[in-house]
Length: 120
Image 1: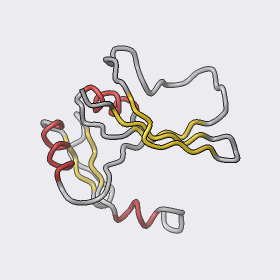
Image 2 (image 1 turned 60 degrees about the horizontal axis):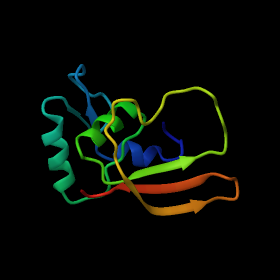
Image 3 (image 1 turned 90 degrees about the horizontal axis):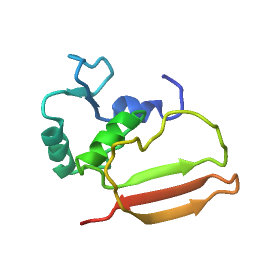
Image 4 (image 1 turned 45 degrees about the vertical axis):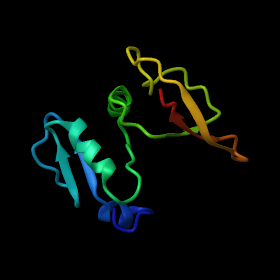
């Protein structure tokens, strides 16, 4: 990733991998969260620092929502109908009411919207 946009940040930032199968993470500054991920993520959220971002795992987002561990859902919605693909919100997820935190429409037609789960 040397020379790639964002590579320096991604290589330097702490990364936490939630996995049932991995014993070791090879990427710089990576830690495996295997046993008791609810406790581990809850402790991470209580620490000082920046936001915790999930990249590339709709399955993990689904699970985090079910555990009440999501503070915001930050989406970029492209004006394209693909017709197939993996759904972010899968069957079996309990109803979660959301509130719009922010919304921005780009000239390209991409809609950037941030939602927060409503507190019960």
